[in-house]
Image 1 (tube, rainbow, N blue to C red):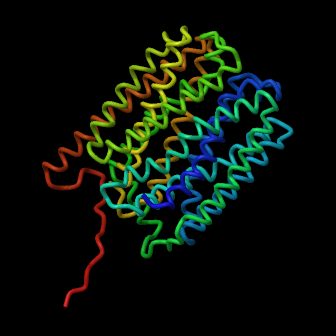
Image 2 (image 1 turned 135 degrees about the vertical axis):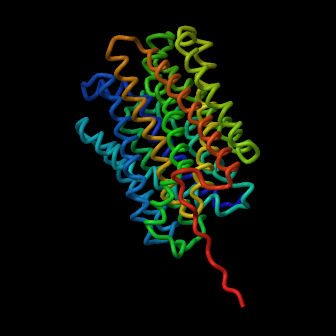
Image 3 (image 1 turned 60 degrees about the vertical axis):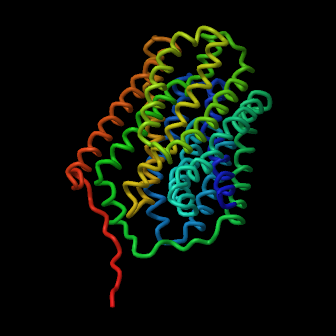
Length: 402
C-alpha cells in the first residue's frame, strides 16, 4: 500500500477525534454552559448536519484545484473550527465552531477515498479505503479516550485545543506525503450530479444513513447511559470508548478485507448482527461486563459496513465518483444527526437512557432491508442485460482508431 495512505490516515485521525470526543464530554460541556444533556446533543447533530451540507459544497468548490491542494485547504478549515470551539464563550459559538470544523469532514473523506482507491489496483480498492479510515477508527482507541480523559481532568477546552494541533499535524502530513495528483480532466459538475441518478448509488447512501445512524443512536448518549444505567463511574467512560474504538478498528479492517471478496454478503451479516446487538443493548446496558462487550460489538459491526458501502458508491458512480463519494460521507453524518435527534427525543420523552438503543436497532434493520432490495434490483438488472430504472449509463472515453 502506498505511503500516501498514511497521510490520509493522519488527517482522518484528527477528524475522527473531534467528531467522537464530544460524546464523552457531553456532561462537562452541558454543565459548563448550563444546558441539558439533550441540548448538548445538538453539538453532535450540528456537526453531523455540517458534514452533510459541507460535503457537496466543499467538493464542488474543490473541482477547480488539485485534490492534494484541496485536502490541505480542508485541514486548514478543520483547524480553524476547532480553535473556535476551544475558545467559545457561549454554547452558540461552541456550536458554530463545531459546524465550521465539520465543513471539512465530508469532502476530506470523500476526496480522500477517491485518492486512496486510485493509488491501488482495482481488487484492492476497499482495502485502501479501509486503511485510510483506520485513522478514524484509531482515533477512537487513542484520540477520543485521551481527549475525554484530558477534558474531564483539565477541561474540555484543552481537549479541543489539542484537536486543533492534531489538525496541523494532519495538514503537514498531507503536504509531505500525498502525491501532487492533478485534478481529473473532462469531469464537469453535471457529470458528477448525473451519477446521483443511479438507483444503486442512492440505495447505498440510504443504507449508510440508516446503518450508521443505528450506531450513533446508542453511542451519542453512551456517557449518561453507562453512568446512570450500568453504574460506571464518570472516569470509566474513557475506557469504554477505548473498547468502542477497538471494535471500530477491527470491524473496519475486516469489512475492507471481505468487501473486496463478497461485498453484499458482508453487508447482510454486519447490518443484521448490528440490529440484533443494538436491540440486546437495552438489556445488557444494565450489567457492566455485558455493556462493555456490547459497546465493542457495536463499534465492530457498525464500522464493518463503512468500506463496503463506500466502495459500492464508488463502483456505481465510477464515471464521476468524487461528489458521490463525498455525499456518502455526508450520508454517514446525516444518519448521525438523525439518530442523535431521535435519541434525544426518546430520552426527553421519559423513556430512559437505554431507549436510543431501540431507535438504533430499528434503523439498522431498515438498512438491512434496503441491502436486500438493492441486491434484488441488481440481479434483475443483470438478468435483463439493461440498466435498472433510474440509472444513468456512464459514458466511456472514445479511442481514436486508424
